[in-house]
Length: 248
Length: 217
Ligand SMILES: Nc1ncnc2c1ncn2[C@@H]1O[C@H](COP(=O)(O)OP(=O)(O)OP(=O)(O)O)[C@@H](O)[C@H]1O
Ligand SMILES: [Mg+2]
Image (cartoon, rainbow over all chains, first blue to last red; front, side, top):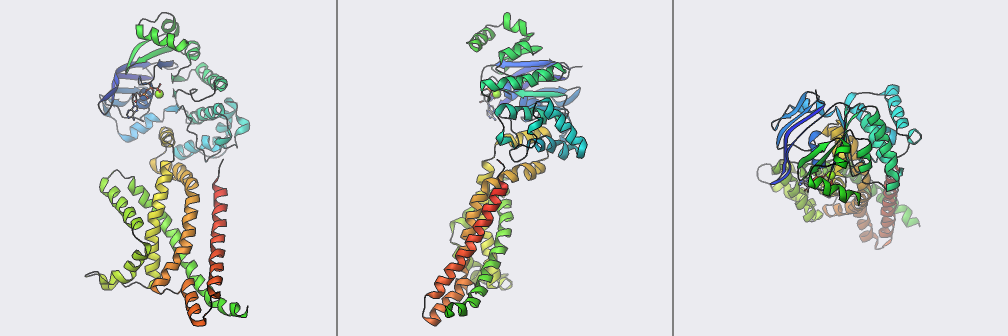
C-alpha cells in the first residue's frame, strides 16, 4: 500500500486553477524531488497534503487513511491524527523566536502528546546531536546561522516521530555555502528510509538522493520517473527547457 | 521649605488617588484591549464590526467627554439612568479603562500583524490547538513587539489621570489647584510636577525592565 496516494487533486484560488488534476503515489521510503518553475504549484501541493490549504477536489490518502475523498474531508479529529503523521520543513524555518533551541524541539511533543521530563529531553538532545547542534541547545534561534536554523527546524519536525517529511525549498533561503550542511542532514534521513517529498531547486540533490523526480508545470505533474530518466532523457519538451534553464 | 513640608501630606493623598486609578485602569484595560483585538479578527462579521466601531468611537472622541458622559450623562439615560449614578472614582476608572482598552486594542492589532504567518502554519502542522498557538506562541511574541508602545501609553495614562480633577475627584492636580488658589503661590504646581515626574520615572523604569526581560534575541 502506498504511503501517500493522491488522486485527481484540484486546487483553485478564486478562479485561478493552481493544481489541475494531480495524481501520484509515494511508497514507503521513497524520496521524491519535486521540481518545476516558479508558480507551477509545488508549494500548494505540499500544503494541501498537510492540511494548510483546503483542496477544491480530489482525494488524498495517507498510509491507507483518507484525509479527503472526492473533495470531502474526514472529521477534524481524524484530520489532525493524519496530519500528525507528517512533518513539514519550511523555506523560512519558522522557528519559535522566543524559545531556546531545546524548547523549540520540546514544546510540540509536550503540548500535543503530554510528554515531559528526562525522556523528552533525551530525545531532543539525541536529535540535536544528529543534526550536529547538541552544543547549541540553550541558544536562542536569533543567534543561529540560516543553516543551523534549518537543521533545528528539521530536528523539531522529527520530535513528533513523523512517518513522512515534507520539505518546501529547505535551502532556498540559505547562503550557498550553508546549503551543504542541511542537504547532508536530509541525505542521512533518506538513508534511514524516511519517506520524503522535497520541493527543491537543488538539481544535484534531486539527482543523487531522490529515488524519483517529479516535474511540475502549470498545476500538473507533467513527467515523473527515476532521476537518471528525468535528467538524461526527459520525454517532455517543457521538462527539457526547464532543465537546461536550471543548469545555466 | 517649611511651606513645602506643610503641603506635602495633602499632595501625597492626591497622588495616592492618582496611583490607585493608574493601578486599577492599567491591568483592566490591557486584557480588555486584547479581547477587543481578538474581536476585530473574528470571522463572524457583526462581532468584528462592533469591535471596530468601539475602537473608532473611543479613540475618536475626547477622553474628557467620555469622562463627563459616564459621570454626568449616565444618570439621565431614560429608564436605567437613576441606577447609574457613579461615584467620581468609579466613573473615572470606568471611562479610563474603556478608553485605554481602545488604544491598547489598536497597539495589539499592530503587534499581531507583525507576527509572521509561518508561526501559525508551523504550529498547525505540529498539532498545536489554536488556543495553544495563541497563548504559547503568538501572545509572547506580541508582548515583546508591543511593550514599548504599551509603556508609552502607560505614561500617558499617569498624566491623563489629571483630567479627573474636572469632575472633582480629589487626586493630585485637584489638591494642587486648591492650594494654589488658597495660598497665592505657584510652589504647589512645582511640587506636583515633581511628583508626576517621579511616578512616570518609576513607570518608565518598570517598562524598561520588562522590555529587557522580554527580549529574547
Ligand atoms: N493563498 C493564495 N491565494 C491566491 N493565490 C495563491 C495563494 N497561494 C499561492 N497562490 C498562487 O498559486 C500559484 C502557485 O503557487 P505555489 O506557491 O504553489 O507555486 P510554487 O511552484 O511553489 O512556486 P515557487 O517556486 O515560486 O515557490 C501561484 O500563481 C501563486 O500566486
Ligand atoms: Mg513554493
